[in-house]
Length: 435
Image 1: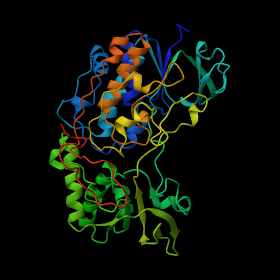
Image 2 (image 1 turned 180 degrees about the vertical axis):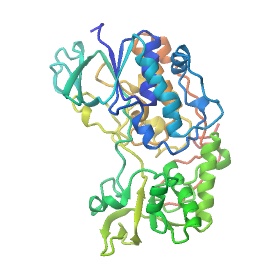
Image 3 (image 1 turned 45 degrees about the vertical axis):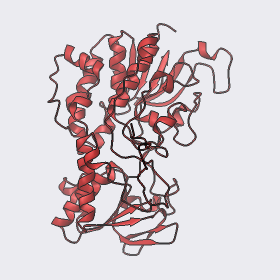
Image 4 (image 1 turned 30 degrees about the horizontal axis):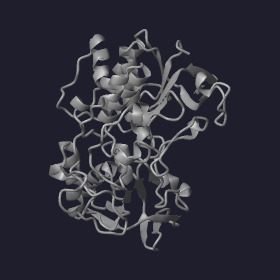
């Protein structure tokens, strides 16, 4: 067992940071990436500019690995796009790690299952003494990778939430799939821009992705006057959907919210509040109609951008013993710290290996996947998570317990609130952002 490697699932920002921490500690590590290059999912939203500067996007251990490889760091105060992040940091990091003696990076290696050798989920006897068996789908078939420890940092990008307001695909949603996208389209690409120009476009969702879409669509509407935009908001008011503005300690994040608010207030976008989609019907002219649970309709829709969040894929962990919160699908100890029903601040209490460990000894969830259905995740969070986890794996309990996490506040308090109540600011200083 002691000779077996740590297996990290996912060569995204958190997975690569985990491998970098392991390399710095001399731990043999196998990094498994489903795509044919590092951070495949980041590249899928490569046209979007991050609201974190470079100074908050490079993990400390990763910076050391890259420095040893002769890497030149980008200007710390500038803001990269997703493509910049992948090309200038994530891929060079993967290459530098793969060149070391401690880390092996494998591409086109999709993990389809994790279990204990010779033990299914129900077997107690000798369980902790057996290594993990990680089943990997490759171009030549299924392979097994044997591991002493496993960190699942595979993210949630592959599991977008459906359009349906009850968490399930709406009736008619699959049939209208050619009119629905679950990502922010690159409206600066001429071919994609033509798809939405002069059309009636619906945007569903209230997070940063929807804000990006609204800003770009408002610009398109100025250029193409026939472009109409309807914004579906599940809550009874859109007033809390723009973030903290000038109070956001991430300046770019606050600026994005302010631009989205301006786009809506300019009249280019029609907000439809309290709308939870139950059905999608297709008309004879191939447009679609979105129907809410209360019977209201948004008709004559040409395109739908459903950016309603993501959820983790837990299917490959069916034989791993997990302790997850039933609401957020996150480690139970982490749930109270990030539950959007309780607070919506950018700040998160320090957490690491202790909160991320599972009943399956030696198995950890980390990165965006550890946040399940919660959305307030920053790269800094993942970097600190995996630093603590790798320290615990290495037997350095003091380093594992010393978790330093100081996130920029979003300037928004009060929790997610109830769907049918107006947004209300908390009274006094007792809110989640209070002193």
